[in-house]
Length: 85
Image (cartoon, rainbow, N blue to C red; front, side, top):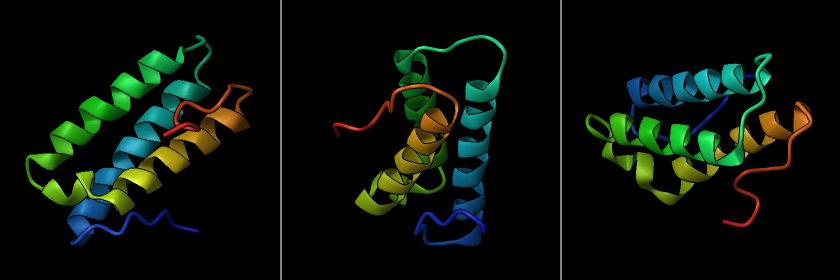
């Protein structure tokens, strides 16, 4: 199943999916990561996406990105990063 972010365009969807895939790859790497590293990576990635797709900071896309990242964290033995937001 393809991830869905509720962006306004297919390009915005691809940008969000690329960010989630990049973060997930980092989480799945051999080097352990901290919640702060992942949070910073997501925040910086969303800022880059916002240059062309400002809606990334709307509630739905932000929630979907963080939910997919939290799922990757849990699937790889970490605590969720965004569980309390």
